[in-house]
Length: 113
Length: 115
Image (cartoon, rainbow over all chains, first blue to last red; front, top):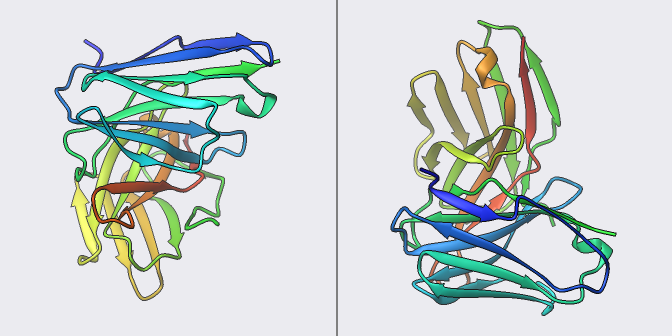
């Protein structure tokens, strides 16, 4: 039974489109995260939610909008996709916002053409 | 700015020998340091951590050493096994500016190949 799952696993789309990536965790964790791993392999945090409340919002274009309908789900919606948005997006969760151990999903590889 | 640096993109080690993965950091305010392991097409998985107040933490074949004065940490794997072949990310944890939550900062990773 997958702890942190993401859909879709692969996403190929054209510039200008709007797309969403979904994430679900069944660990009962309070805190969820979105990370972006770019072509240079850096894994950088984008957002974090704790019990549906946004607690981390890094310098990310406002075309990216996270939504947490409940503490088990954190979705990422991206408007007006650009070539530079091509990356692997990882969802993660941790038991609390002060937990250092995070559990990652398998990633969603987004390719914008 | 790169606060966590892994200067070796890859490392090749023979089975049974020691693997040493290195990591340097610039921010002296980091509270914890962690190593994550990542296989292809999977997300990173937590491996081992060390508090900034300690200099060594051991878990089975994995030992992490922290040298605060040099702002350097290393992960030792002894003995190395083929299943250890993966990308290893060094990460550091710090409180955000408001002190309300932790944030992880990752290095670029080192690909370890054990053959």
